[in-house]
Length: 331
Image (cartoon, rainbow, N blue to C red):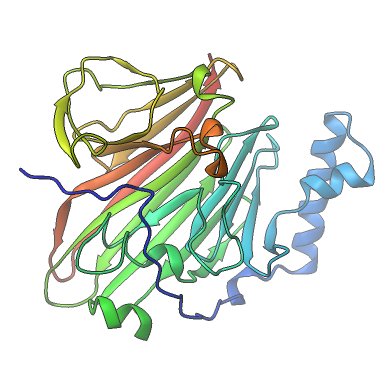
């Protein structure tokens, strides 16, 4: 089958629609807040951190606003101290920190003011991946998602049709994105429902940016060897066969590996491994890096994207799930 994919660096942006954010489910009563504060204080003290600033740092879960005015949810695990940031604009996870190590990258040239999709994080490409009938990578990454529920360690976001989305894609969909900060991993679930009677087709991807200490320290392992991939950097797109079991990056990359969904990033500079666990829905992997582009900070990130490239046909009343988790470990 022929495969068409625009370079991940290609970009078309349609200004976002302002969508209201529900906060009704985010309010916590005073007694609950006090219980959480006490729990976190105990966590800090058990680790020798007793200052007010240390406690405040750990106790900072909740709905926040960045310096540019964008809202995000900060998740904090009460036992491990791991954190994650999830922006309502684009429904994008922009941070996952464990033991002081940041695993998710945001490019230095990224805008985090809502003027364009955030260049980094676990960015949604939905209902389209790459170019097609609507704008590049769809619209999920440049609309505000609504908070449906949240706790210290999880948040559920929802994206429903609006006048803005109907202008380009008039389908009766409902997308729910759940992020859960567990003791040993960060779990995500993309749940797509067809609320209408007529079937529709869609693609789905997490355009995931991951930090690396340096590309020369990076190896990407998985079931790559023997798999066909589309190399967008050769003659505008050429199908090739991968002869390596371990991928290293020393040139510009834009490759679609069909049937590979078990990548792991091994960074000898940090001594860490990040396993990308695609357990449902996502069947393919895209590797992208703008090698040599200093403005994008090419040497400190790589995109290892979880993708359902072949279109899903979703009948009326049916649903689709994409499960992806990030699991750090030591080399």
